[in-house]
Length: 194
Picture 1 (tube, rainbow, N blue to C red):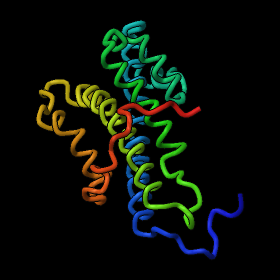
Picture 2: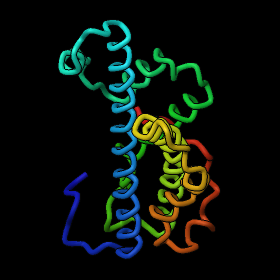
Picture 3: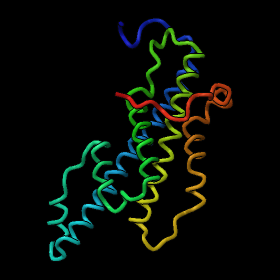
């Protein structure tokens, strides 16, 4: 195990660029997902504080909020709110949490860039694609919650909700063309990173 970069040129520079572009876009979505989960929990905590003490001022409520937690802790706390009664939503969120961990810890991990083969890159991209699909499902759930918090009088944008998984896949992997469709026979769920 030596340096991450060396004088040796990559065997598959264009495919590596495509993979790293996908990994970066996936990481952006994973970070946004985590931020949205924290936002929903903050709003749920504010609502709880307002119900517990209606005389308390907004600044006092904000100052009394618990600090943000990592994603696992955020989910545990969300499960204890009124949102926690929707099991199917939390199944999607848990799959997205596992996918987020894979993306953050292994999303761009293909080994030595001077030795990795086309098959290795496409195989890894297929695993990343499965993780992004799981992330998109959970992100779609939490995005609807955010929309409801921000626009409580507006109807949910059904067309966007229905199209979201396809939009995410196209944005993250569209530059691969049809290469991943041939390779994409991976399991639909990601193994959780330790």
